[in-house]
Length: 464
Image 1: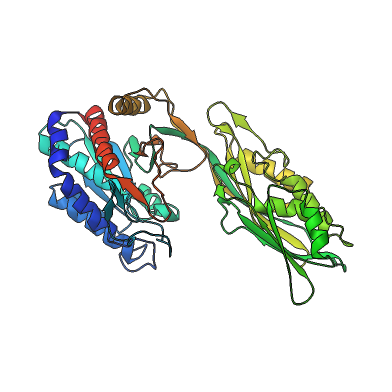
Image 2: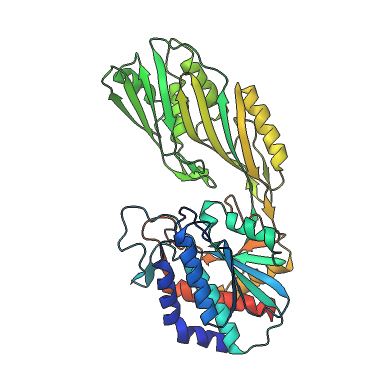
């Protein structure tokens, strides 16, 4: 990194913090659309703030109908690199913050506030990396286009809109994940299924069951209402499931509510969790009902075996060297009036195709007496490890972080999943805990500065 660029950041670091504070103060959570504000006032205000900063620092800017903004370093030159960040944030939540979530708070070398790491802090770091390069007077031979979006947290329709209007640069990276470089992202299917028909219930029966709240997480809790069983009998059956928490609550009408507690985890890393929904299905399948209810849950439990995170019991398991094993999470259960409905999240290896996986799921669900209602998804994403782009970013990371590194394959999806040639580069360093999406989201001032240095080095290697 050129000494002039480093000195610029060191001399203007307080301005970086000030500009980040201005962005954090805007609660850019998705809201109701308004004219010129497709994702509501908050994201629109954040976009205007960012474009205003860039314009003040002498960059060419454009607001693309409120969906995204573009900031060009040297628009008269060929655009060969794109950098993609987003300014929308998830809701702050209602508790456990040590400070006001939409006000930058600095303590112990860390900056706290919604969006500081995801993704407003990295966006300011990119802006200042471009500013340092601009102010240094170094000979720039290519343009970098900084694209700031406003809908990453709710499906990335912002980038889909932009792609329909403008051609993206041939190389794009996003600092919306982790270092060193993420070049492989598994494909994804989110499916819904049901049993075919209801049946008459008996005097010892499972009346209802539910669990899970979102499709992309291992469910932490699940419950059922049963009749004809006492709590002692139900407790005895629970002894076969020691890894789960159970409670049994008698209801006013003589039934019993069975509550199960497991452990949540993201659907891209389900092995870190303990699935309460699959646990509930397995447990209910062991009860001696005098109707078909227990048998139905036993059949579900055969297809989605408790804590089988690889799809082996359903017969859809797959793996490859590049991206690893398929993961599968039965994440939402809803059972009423004799029909079991469920939703699942699957991340499949890049060696598989979306069409092929749909066929596997359709056939497997049918073999277990279920029907697929929907199987929506996306193909896997891969940028070859030996590409110049990936190797350049790895060299940058190694130079700035004092060591060699290998690119990463993940089960999650980043902001560049649907962008050909796109990779993730930062902003979290290995071992950091930044509470992304949680209370007390934070970003250390040291990492804020180091990310900016990293982006400067990347720009120097890619466009000079």
